[in-house]
Image (cartoon, rainbow, N blue to C red; front, side, top):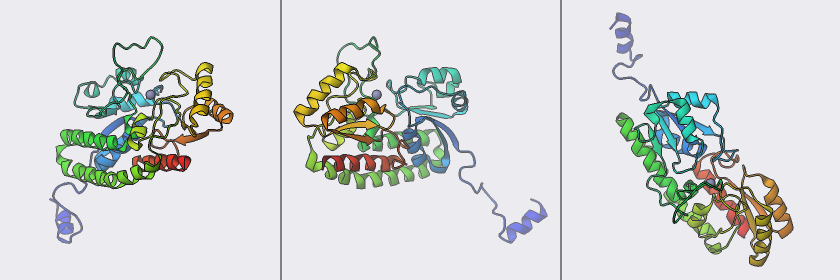
Length: 304
Ligand SMILES: [Zn+2]
């Protein structure tokens, strides 16, 4: 130690010993969606540097990653995604990046679908012959906050495994997140209790987990099948269905083209209800909790 450092230390000006910053080198994480990135940041805190690829303004199934995204994946220590066939662009992106540390099955890969009880799992053989998706079950599970809790736990387990030195901090962040959701979940459920069993029309089959959480129904969508754009035949069917069942609203994510929803609403008198499928899709949905809160309040206000 130099004389000057010794002097400063004695004067209490320089802190000696282990690095002052607990996270001199945060873990580089790439998440496919903004919602996943938000959860990783919530649990990882200062221990992670998170980048998300898909803008919440676009359909998460059909993103075209940019060359800069490929570079980010190349440098990532952890790649977090939704699993199943959520990101149809995931495989090509990983191939382009060529970072074997984050390839499927490696320690640097995390599929958030693990441990989730999937809805709409097809029975019997499946194929993409008609261009449809959701072949392994519905991949939009994060819209149910009970699943958000599971995903946070999965993220915490992974961060603790690859960075055990900061396990305590990750566990603390997880506990704080779970406590907040545990407090909100009964409030959210009770807000919709008076409307249990009510039916809505959807855009894409992105909402079954939210409907299931709140006790609402959504059997039919503008898309005749997941990933197939609205057809005149489907719109005509919905027109009759909405009238017959007195359905009050058509749910649309901000990214979903508004034309078909608006014209169906105009002809039937149903309202178009704009919900958030991902964090940042609307300014009100700045993080995971505020997104669920916004969706719940919007649904309640429409059904009132
Ligand atoms: Zn989908």
